[in-house]
Length: 285
Ligand code: PMP
Image (cartoon, rainbow, N blue to C red; front, top):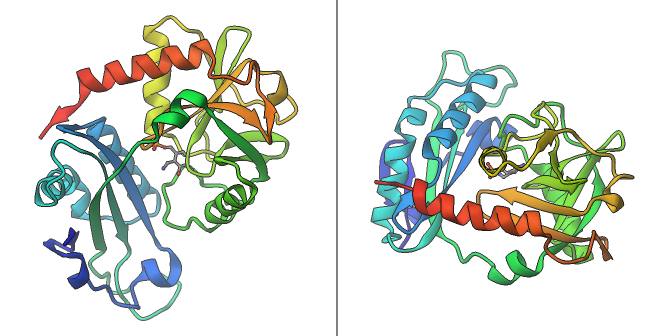
């Protein structure tokens, strides 16, 4: 059975019990982080830990568990026999268990920390052939930079994508594409790689940052500039980035080809460079 981590203890998932008065359950009052395990090590572990700490800071939640994230993650990989496999580690920290009231618990209670690791099977075909995406109204709050567990707008937008046969939906706020429901979006136009600048309207993706760094190393010009949904049909290439999907070509918008309708040359170059970077950079535990 799967071994998970809950509040300082590693235990079988069936024994990991959380109170219904947990503020994560009642209010989605918490944050999370997801990190990728590549057979023998984690990618960008420090960046994920830093983002977790930042998310906690932004919601004014202080938990010593964030300092232990890397050791908890490594322990979950070994206890679940995931060495030699591809996996994701998920960690969630909430403001703890207390009688339901909007204000922070007084006196403060210990935050709840839950983490698990799970094997993944990356989809090879999609990363070669590319995916079809849709557009949806961005109804989220104005702090999308916080990796909050309150994901209802993302869930509704993604469910709509699934029901329409799209791989992802791109959020559009005031005519501008911000990001996708669980990934960042990049474009190639006139030889330049474009992506929405860091702001409160997107999650600052770790993969987004790694890809921008790769572009700089490869002398591919990058501009952190948002594009409007009207500009999308005119881009030469588009791709999504995320911890689980790495660099994923977007070849169609609502069934209409983007550029050639195939994974573009810049996207393919970045996919190869990303794989090479993974080989170089993974941090063995
Ligand atoms: N944006 C959103 C809304 C996300 O949920 C995610 C994935 N968690 C991303 C972007 C991509 O971030 P990362 O590259 O750190 O996985």
